[in-house]
Image (cartoon, rainbow, N blue to C red; front, side, top):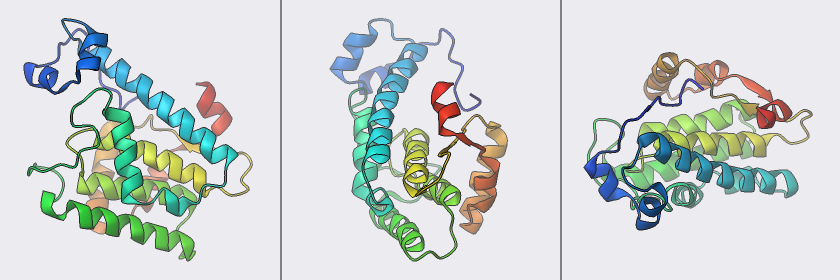
Length: 213
């Protein structure tokens, strides 16, 4: 898909290797190729995503239970702690993207609470926009050391699925999009806090088609 990197035979840097868990280094061997590292991350994501898709399809999990900061932190931990020492850890340093680290906890909680309120009180936000808004809001905050895009896209997938009550067929986002346009629309969200353009840009497909690709 367009958001996937093309690493080829590139090796991880020494700094990246130092941040890997001992278990991940053992699995990846030496030297460590970025492509192999990416594949390991993708495998873990697939396992976590499959578990949560099953939970949402088989149990009545309220959307509000997904739109809470501790769920997002745990999701990040499950995706990355097996591979990276920083898995699940909030960012503590200033970066050129995201907000100041001392504001992350409050901003993250407020953004998710606001979306949960909008959904619970049926203020006009639809399921497709809700998931994308959760993704865009957290990308703006950039709460974690790394992995913000991946964890927030998975959160969007789960929120979208959880919000589809009685839909047939169920729909899923197709993240195979033009990267430059996607980043531009994330920037537009930063300015307006309106996720509708981004929600219309990211296509949706039936869950049957999505899971068989």
